[in-house]
Image (cartoon, rainbow, N blue to C red):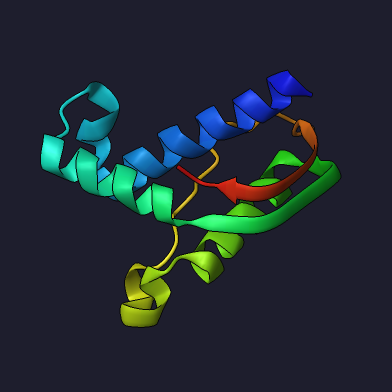
Length: 108
C-alpha cells in the first residue's frame, strides 16, 4: 500500500507540474517564483478525508482533482484558478488499483 501511495503522489505532482507550468517544468527549467507559487498553492489545499477501496488509478485521480478544486481556498476569490489539473500519462491496461484511507490530506 505504501508503494501505491507513493506512486499516486509522484504521478499527481509530475502531472500537475507539467500542466500548471508548461512542458519546460518537466525538464527542470522552472523559474523559482513560479515554483514557489506552486508549492504555496499546494500547501493550502487540504482534503478532509479520502478513501479508496480498489479504485482504479484514473478514478482516484479524478476524485482528487475534483476534491482539490472544492477545498482550494482560492475557490472563494478566484474560482477559475481553483484546484489542480491532473492528467494520467500512462495507458496501462487494466489500470492499477488504489486502496487508501487518509484524513486531512494536504495536497502539497
